[in-house]
Amino acid sequence: MNTVYKFPDGFLWGTATAAHQVEGNNYNSDGWLMEHLTHSLYLEPSGDAVDHYHRYQDDIRLLAELGFNSYRFSIEWARVEPEREFFSQAILDHYKRMLEACHQNQLVPMMTLHHFTSPRWLIHEGGWGSFETAARFGEYAGLVMRELGDLAGAVCTINEVNIPTMARMLWMRHMDEEGDNDEDGDSFYRMALAEAATRFRVPIEKLKPFMLATSEHDREVMLNAHQQAALACKAEHPDVPVGMTLAMADMQAEPGGELIRDEYRHELQDIFLDAAREGGDDFIGVQTYTRERYGPEGLLPVREGAPVTQMGYENYPKALEGTIRYAAAKSGLPVYVTENGIGTSLDSERLAYYRTALQGVVACMRDGIDVRGYYAWSAFDNFEWNSGYEKTFGIISVDRETQKRKVKTSGFWLGDVAKANQYPID
Image 1 (cartoon, rainbow, N blue to C red):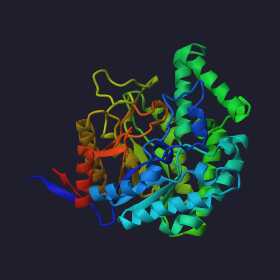
Image 2 (image 1 turned 135 degrees about the horizontal axis):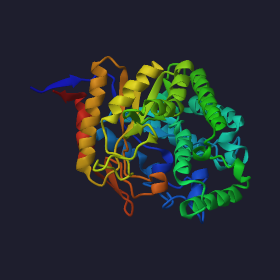
Image 3 (image 1 turned 180 degrees about the vertical axis):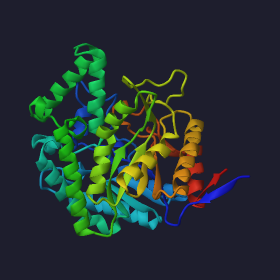
Image 4 (image 1 turned 90 degrees about the vertical axis):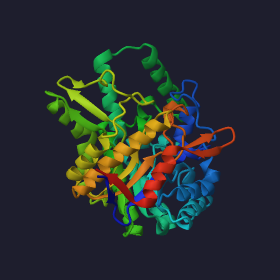
């Protein structure tokens, strides 16, 4: 007989977006320049995106009508501080109106202060390879909280602060497998970096936008930036919860793969979870899409015949339960699932993914784990970075010629779950 699990009052049900992926025309950012290189690593530029910058009022109203009670979105540093030490009051007022629109529609706003893109000027001054950036990010965070913090429900400082480390380890694996060659993709990558360095007017070894800041030194800069931002936020509004978010695959060991799995997990997850705990963060944001399997030789390919997503990794929604359990145990902190979803052209697959993922959330909570919210990635089919607009994660589709929104079945279903604040269990 089916029963239901009733989520606690105040559980946050939301969707998530990132400014650069949905707002459009983020031309003062390093990402915009990288998209427009002759040797661009992006399939296409972001352009107008889904014009969320101008359409946010209707978009926020739509999310509320679906049944959500929260919305996670990012404040774009490149808009707020387009030139060093010039803070745009007009942009701050824009984001204030967004926050007010959330409250008018009974959505708790969760702000993210950095979601991959940074101001162009930052690259000239060392980018994410310089501890000066950590101080400047702290200043920016303090300003945002002075201006907007009384409207914030929670704050994520840096989105997926561990993902550059992940990129470094993926590159190391690639080099181990392929050797150091200068053919095809590797050659194009080097040309892209050389062109970007020329455009930014920095030596190539000093080219440190967030996603290319992959050294251990850069990791320390990012963790310091998180710490300074968290302190600045708390100094302005000590009652607003603050934390970081992590990209977390469910890292599973096949027989004989335990040691190497643990080595990778230490670098990719443990260092950051320990920092969150030791730094006194209020929560940890878990962002999960799939699992990784490790054997004695390292990361294993997706098992033959296993379903895969548009991104090429395994369609494995059970991963979320594993990462929630690990993050909570390792950090000792409350958990928000700040991103979870699937890139697929079939909304039936998306719906099935959510059904299984939420079963994992319920299992964790029934075992006493403090999970405080669930945010689906993403509100809209949007600009998926290097993949352009080909990959579709949204619960709402967008016709980019007309910018017309259309809610998918998965969006209606997830909104209904949010409205009911309960979920069936066996």
